Image (cartoon, rainbow, N blue to C red; front, side, top):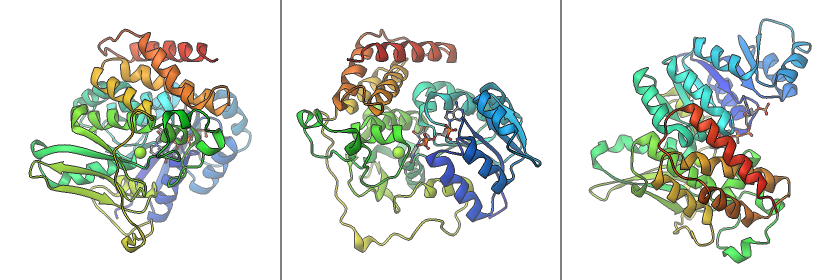
Amino acid sequence: MMKKKAAVLGSTGSVGTQVLDVCEKLGAEVVFIAAHSNIGLIAEQIKKYKPKYCAVTDINAANRLDNMISGETKLIKGYDEMCRAVYDLDCDVVFNAVSGKNGLFPTLSVIRSGKTLALANKESMVLAGPIVNAEAKKHNAAILPVDSEHCAIFQCLKGGKKSEVKRILLTASGGPFFGYTFDQLESVTLEQTMKHPTWNMGKKITVDSATLANKGLEIIEAMHLFDVPYDKIKVLIHRQSIVHSMVEYNDNSVIAQLAVPDMRHPGQYALTYPDRCEAVIDELDLTKYTLTFNEPDTNAFKMLALAKECAKAGGIMPCVYNAANEAAADMFLRKLIGFNDIYRICDKVLSKTENRALTDTEQIIEYDKRSRELAYSYKE
Ligand code: NDP
Ligand code: MG
């Protein structure tokens, strides 16, 4: 592989650390890292990767880090400053592995600078898919999906023409509560929720994988990444997380992408794209698995049903869904509410919201804030 220059935003997170590992193993140069406040790990990363720039968005943490580091790395303090620096940056690919709605503005900065965006932050697409796509087109910027399912779909779409696509089969592990009824879900604990069967991920997305809100967000993400309507995206529960998603063509031929469940594959694919190279991840031994597929149970996993409604409604509803879910997942992680309250709270927030056409990022921020506040106010 040609030696590439990469930037990693959200470098201290679950995806960010795995992307850094891929960069190291494949000999890419890490020129920029960014995170919010985990300065212990950031200091280690600066020492190890010697990036030209490091952005820390929490100002207090940034000031503390200033006293901890020496050397060539230039420290950038604050969120807006991070976005500006990313815009000005000279590199081949920017990984956005920031969590939550704060991923949106870095996404826009990368795209407006015409650089290639390797996107793990699904919220960018959920909140502002049409805006992100319009900007990407205008500035001729490529978006390479790093969410494992979307990276799979991206690869499967190379199997035919866009006009020949019948539907997308989006796989979901089903999480730790596969087979539970809504009543049984009522009493599940935080500890049970955090034990994901196949993936080791950040805390918030682990909760989303248990409620299937993650799959709901991924439907909306896929609609915008691949320009397909919501009713052409079908969710399939696939317990083994080996088939990362599929594309069905009009001749009923289904193209699938398989690999061991390891986020470093989508990271590697985006880093080396359009080429492939020797693997960072383990080889897949298919004799070790029995692959199964099931219909999702939307009566039990009502967050998936809610997401489908939001995907259909479009406008500001996906933003409201995401914000209410981020707040509710946060309350669940702090043991303030029960598992099914996540759904109840999101349902209430959505039913209190009148949909609007998407206009601009100011509107998104306003609805995001309002929906979060509403969600927190419903804490029992
Ligand atoms: P984590 O919570 O593990 O990490 C989040 C990262 O974002 C941390 O580096 C954090 O810094 C940083 N961060 C948070 N807020 C800001 C901010 N305002 N400005 C700059 N950096 C910030 O999350 P994950 O790695 O699990 O997820 C990241 C994204 O990738 C999410 O959108 C998620 O949905 C998506 N994703 C994750 C997958 C996974 O396997 N984990 C799989 C597919 C998609 P700090 O540590 O300093 O707080
Ligand atoms: Mg995913």
